[in-house]
Amino acid sequence: MSSGKHPGQFYTEVVGDSTFTILRRYQNLRPIGSGAQGIVCAALDLSTSTHVAIKKLSRPFQNVTHAKRAYREFVLMKLVNHKNIIGLLNAFTPQTSLKEFQDVYLVMELMDANLCQVIQMDLDHERMSYLLYQMLCGIKHLHAAGIIHRDLKPSNIVVKSDCTLKILDFGLARTAGTGFQMTPYVVTRYYRAPEVILGMGYKENVDIWSVGCIMAELIRGGVMFPGSDHIDQWNKIIVQLGTPSQDFMQRLQPMVRNYVENRPRYAGYSFENLFPDCLFPPNSSEHAGLCAEMARELLSKMLVIDPEKRISVDEAIMHPYINVWYDENEVNAPAPDPYDHSVDEKEHTVEQWKELIYQEVMDFENKERQLGSAMQNHTGTDGAANSKPPAADGVAKGSPSKNRQR
Ligand code: AMP
Image (tube, rainbow, N blue to C red; front, side):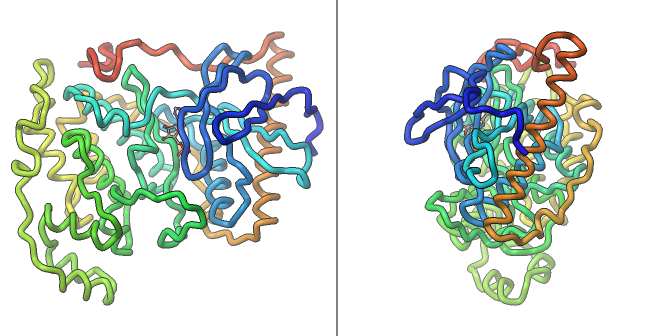
C-alpha cells in the first residue's frame, strides 16, 4: 500500500513538547503556533527553496471528534484552491502501514502571523479594508463550494507582511454538536453569530457576523463580545446592540425563546458611540470610501443580530469600504467541486476513522509520487512551487500591494 517509502527519507527532531518525524527535504524546523490539533512549525523546503508551514496531527483518530475534524480538513484542503484559503502543498505520514499508522503531517504555504497578532497593530484604512476584502473573497469561495464556515476567528486567519491573507480552516461541520470536546483545549466562541449561539437555522451571512466581530476588534484593539459562555456572550451582544425585534424572537425554538424574551430589555448604543471617530486611523487621501464614516457604516450592517436584516457577502464586497479592491478573478474565482456533505454526517468508530484518514494520506502520497515522476520525465527536474515572491512592505507600514489600487 505504501510502496516507495523507506525510513531513510525521514528524520526526527524534538520541537518543544513534540517530536516531528518528517521528510528530509524539510529542514530548519521552528515552532510557530499550536492549535487544538497539534503543533505547527516553519521549515525550509530544500526541494523548492521555499519556506513552508508543517502541521503535525498527532494520532488524529484518537477520538471521534479529532478524527472527523482531521478528515474533513484534509479532504477540504485538497478540494479548495483559492488565494485566500490556505493551500496544501504536501501531506505524508512517516509510518509505512495502517497497523503502525500514528501521525499525519500537512505541509502548507507559510504565512507570517495570525490575525491575533495584527489586532495589536495600528492599521490604516487601506490595510484594514484590504484584509477584510480578502476575508470576504475567501468566504465567498467557501460558500461557492457549499461550505458555510460559522467559526471564523482571528487565530484561524493568517497574513503575510505584504498584507495578503488566508483562511486556515473550514469551520464547523454541519453536524457539529454544541461543542462537547474531549481535549482540554479551550474553544473560542466570541466570533460566533447569534443564530449559532441560539441554535437557529443559518445561511451564508452567518459568516458576515464573524467578519464584523473581527473588524470591530481591529478597530477597538479588544474583543467585541468576550462572553465567558453562551449566556454571557448573548448578554454582551444585546447590551451593546440592543434587544432584537419580536420578529426575530418568533424564529427561536420555544425553550431558547423563553430565555431570550425574559432577559432585561436593552436599547443598545449607536454605532457612533460604539465606534467613535477617535478609534479610527486618519481617512485615506486616495480613496473616498476609506474613511471612518464608511467603516462604521459597514460595521453597522454586519453587526446585525437578525440575519434577515444583516448584509450578505456579495453586498459587503460591493460596499464602498471594500470594493476599492474589487477584482473579478478574486471575487468570482472558479468554484471548486462541491463538497460532499455526507462526510459531515458520517459516524464511524475510531478504527474506521483511522483507516479512512490513512487511505486519504496514501492517495495523496501516491498522486504526488505519480506527479513527481511525470514531471521528471517531462522536464528532468523536480517541480518547483508556483508561489510568487511577495512585495516586502509590512502590514503595519506603507500600503498593501500598491499596484492593486485604482
Ligand atoms: P491551527 O492548528 O491550524 O489552528 O494553527 C495554529 C496556529 O499556527 C495559527 O493560529 C497560526 O498562528 C499558526 N499557523 C498555522 N498554519 C500556519 C501557516 N500556514 N503559516 C503561518 N502560521 C500558521
